[in-house]
Length: 363
Image (tube, rainbow, N blue to C red; front, side, top):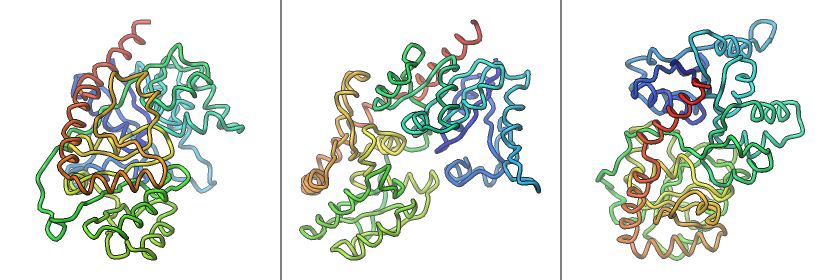
């Protein structure tokens, strides 16, 4: 059985293809020759710059030709149609192309494809809905998508299953240097206030800096609203209590996750995703907005160190309390790691995908 994994939003396709290959399931990742930073495996895995991309990656040319014709879409469909592949695992918007492959396919939802695109009144939105309808299996992992799945009427073939994530991240004691006595907050989420609600945290942190002098923020310098974020921080009590960092590879993420006392995610979508999982791998508590009632439908218990927060006031109060009890952060982080190993074990998740693929091949 050979599988083509198409799409690599936030390196998810690379992680899945790699995990399948490690289990002995021959898999290729379909990747553009000129990927954007967030979809380039080299960004997260710096060793690729020295060793080169693995031989299980297939490339297509996503540059426009002299007639500005986007023939990369035809390249993608042609690659999917190759006889060597028995089935397709298509991430995000790639199920639209998998529809035309003539192969069975799993539509793997990664976020806005199901939350937004599938409900747009546009031709692309129509194609996304049709791709879900024609998919053999829908794979999804964030509980907040359950109402969308019901509305799309695809619950009969929807499987709740996470994506294997890199095991490179782990708890580590790091030298905090000048931040040794600070309560360090790491906010790696892109500044996109519409989709992430970052401004609630930024205002709460500015207020926190007005009442405490032992807190420090490390924030990712990216996203469409990053300049507005800087303005909030630079015109408040936080101006001398934060640092910007660029888009980070796995080595740097390992350092900053372990440097921090708590990780701040997002406050719009009521689910946690990649950032929370990476933080829990490093035994850290995470502040994020979740829908607890939906989570309880799919998990026996919630991660103990998931600090459910929504409003600016809730964020401020929770941060203030944790900054006064850092031992609690350590305890909650350790419990998060235990929960992750029990509920989102990489090996078990990979086996689930293998079972789904084998089920499709046998049909």
